[in-house]
Length: 491
Image 1: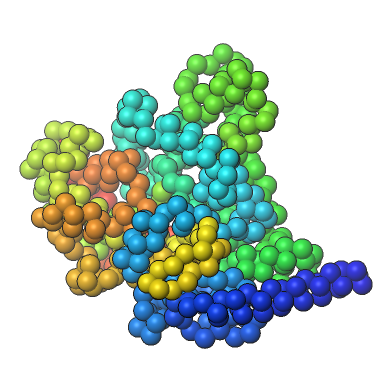
Image 2 (image 1 turned 135 degrees about the vertical axis):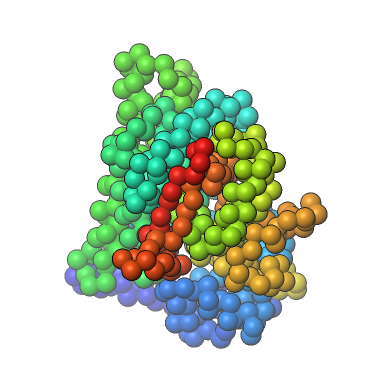
């Protein structure tokens, strides 16, 4: 016990020394404005655990759109405007594309091998190259278009049979994949593992769900303090306040299963002589032929590692029936009622596209600020920004920017109509909130064509208006709500 106390005291003194030296160096340079920090704490006492984006927005009126704070010893840069994000994270992406090390997710929970979390290096480049070989290859993507259509048909049939269970149907069609590694769940299983999902009870969807649900629970704002005070990783799990260690140990087992079980399934299919193509199979065959499979095995398992946006889409359909009806009318006029929309119809349905863009602008995931890290010292507007600085883009505030989106609190798909190419690119919320591309477009457009979605009525016949509510935390998602989905003619 005495040895442990000595170690903790030394760590504390080292932290104090680093803070003092770092603070002296930072103060010798002109930093961006921000609230005054306290010794040792920095601005940690001013960073709320829930809804920090609202505090960041309040700070903008005092300090501007670029704000510098310190959370304990770690420097943090908060970007409160699309212009600042464009200048730094787009134009200088080589400097700002790193990820701050996350003890909670990478080390304690076991997400460290996944592309969205792993640090820059050979593993990151390797996994990005593998995914790019599939997702940017039109020929490869064409192979999965029948799969996309099949999955949308399954979703529509499920909604038709049991409309009250819409949340479960959307859950099957699109699982939340945390940390921006977002692909439709069933399509991910098919393209990555060659496995066709046929049931809500699918074993491999269960593994993914358990891992992601556990991550959502363990990645609470309070637990994230270990990322700012990494020495807390060494405290015993039984100590008061160390709940994050106990919970992360549990979720680590689920994450391991989500990585290993699908990989082992592919190995079994290959051993049995199955010939169904998949990204995983291609990688195994490639590295087995080179004699390096064992060395690459861990990285391959991590490649396969969106319910929220679809729930948000349904909610917008319920809350804004006139905008939803306008999208339906366009589909009726352009396509008719003898078939459902296909990907080839996308350019011919601008009202549908505008509706979906507004859904993205209202996407609750814009609250899920994913931090980046600066890989080298930088200068912006005459300010010094130190290497290692955590960079946070306040997406919530950007999608409510009145200069970009007049009347931002109102759901107005028409705001995206008739724009020049330059303006359309600037205002497209999918450049701010990570988009899901054509897989999600196909699902949304088909639901618009096939169903009237309305507010549910209570026993007295009164409409029940669902609230726009979501679960706060590091990973946010919409709370389930009630609605009424009815089949349209010809659907």
